[in-house]
Length: 456
Image (cartoon, rainbow, N blue to C red; front, side):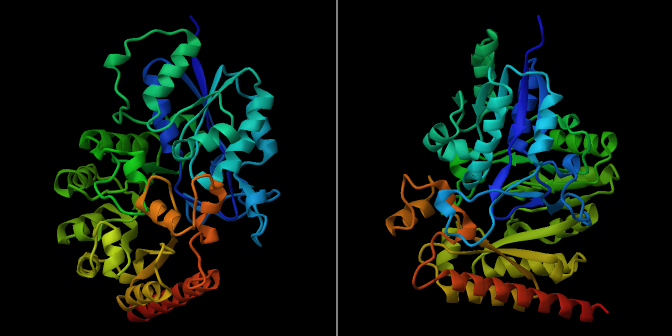
């Protein structure tokens, strides 16, 4: 019997702006690993793989990070009023078609989806797949498919749609297409052990790592509790083995932890992981594009982070205003933040190396509240990173935004794009958001200059 095969597709991003921060389609790769364990052969086309397409047009001074190539396309009707250029990010259409020519016609194609407002990129990708492989069954999963399933059915028109965890569901769909029978009662919904199929990439220089699923917090604006209902950490040995294999076999020297709660249960999770990596003597860089819980960074962890090569450190502060700290499950206070800064400084970091995520645009949030937080971070010698609120279904933030008329159930997901400032109002207009961005940029520059003088 011929080995059953499936084509994995990471689609284009469609947006006004996009930037690569060590990103790879982890959800898709976890499903691929799961299917491989049950006998499926995998093929992969990652339209967002900058190393493969090599068309960014810029020198990659920061491996793993950089600009995607942008192909300008007409703006969708819902955002035609926005005075910015809309585009598809990633491989060119010609590169995509060329890659398809080298693929054995697949019976089934598994397409992932990420940000809901990127769905035009998914639609454009699927349109080409339909034209090129008309008999293949399209299976759509991912964040957009989970948060906006009816919209996805109507606009993407997949043959099958998967919401939530996709491993076991994808296996069942594929088995039905291939006429394979199994006892699914003994098969888990997902399996986080083992390594992902990184060999599907022709070249790789940085890898994102997940050491857990979900988050123990339940912030008003975050959909993680819906997308990942239970917080589950991987076994220490599994994480260490994965990193060591990538380090030794694929010569990867840059890793980005993509956990939502990397430092939770630190004494029994991240600390022994880092201690084990240190004992193996690996010389690598570790980055944390997602916000870290500042209250967990004590002196011991700070020293270990420095010793093992943590470079990009971003702390979740969100706001210094108690009301908005409560909306963030009170995961950080100003005392926690200041103590983390001091512990990291004692471990050898410059304060200007440390970034703090701040949120703006929450329903009811004021300009003054965000401004105070930006100035506070600068006064403490750190760098502020403004994150604009995106209303997401199945969150308390969405319900509040809906109650105040900013969003509605049947709205086009394009209108939730945080670059549009979806909760702008007469009291907090778009111009004020832009003023805050300028303030943040200016204060960050002053912080960096001051730091250089102190260390000259």
